[in-house]
Image 1: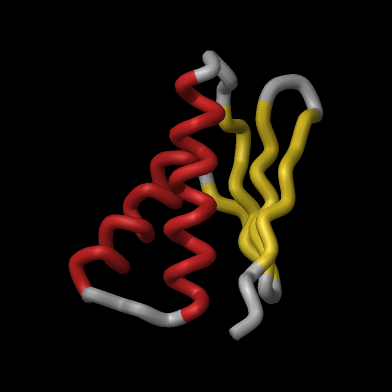
Image 2: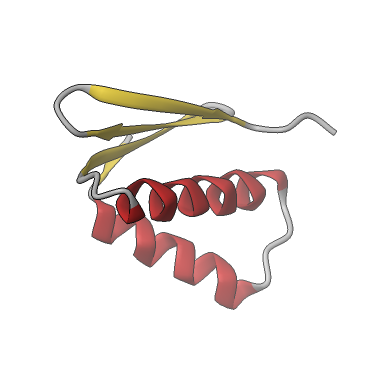
Length: 72
């Protein structure tokens, strides 16, 4: 499922308010932190795709990064 930057941030904020400590929320937190890092380097986030145990950040002219869920 793909999310805009704004929709992803809204979901991230809802997770923070719920005090969710699941592995899914950990993945969301790490994804959000990486999005902020990319944006600080003047990269424009095009879409954040959330899949099974990973997220994919699409940015700047076809670039992407995959963030995997950490296994416990």
